[in-house]
Length: 230
Image 1 (cartoon, rainbow, N blue to C red):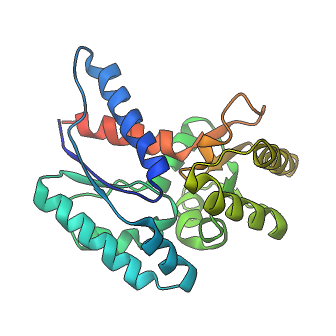
Image 2: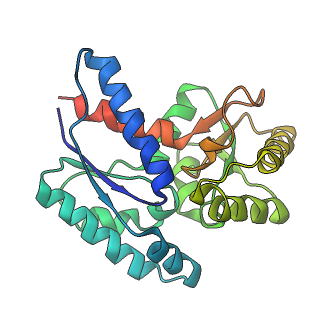
């Protein structure tokens, strides 16, 4: 079994989910008392968020590059960044280590292809929804990407940072997210990517007839299965 190097804490609320899903998947695959071999480097999210808000992606990249290097030195066989937004600097993180990085958008694209999805909506932070670093990984796989309108993007972003990242789950916010999902489905979205690792805390499959693709679930399960590959 490979050792998984997790860069977490962005937020720690969703990093908990990674640990649970990875170990649950290992147990399902191997049975008995098996659990995952993993090393966690958890950063201070306040420091990362300040970099995001000020546009200082170089500083945030440097922080995560140091984390990745520490994980490699500690014996990790590959790296998992436990957040969508910070994949903006994934190439720099990958270039700082000699072990592979499992990209969240790439494994999500594979799941969409398996499900026959060719037109998908993307929910996430404003950075993930508005910039190309994430969407480009889907477009190259011939998947059309829809994003919410300006008002809805602000609502989603505010809910992520001011509620979900601090563990607040609001019925009003859930209702708001589901209305946005319905609007995007009316625009032709065959499914919706929960492109922020906290959104799965708020809405899940079963809340809406539109298929939801939870990136925390997809990324963490992919990491566990990759750890078991020869």
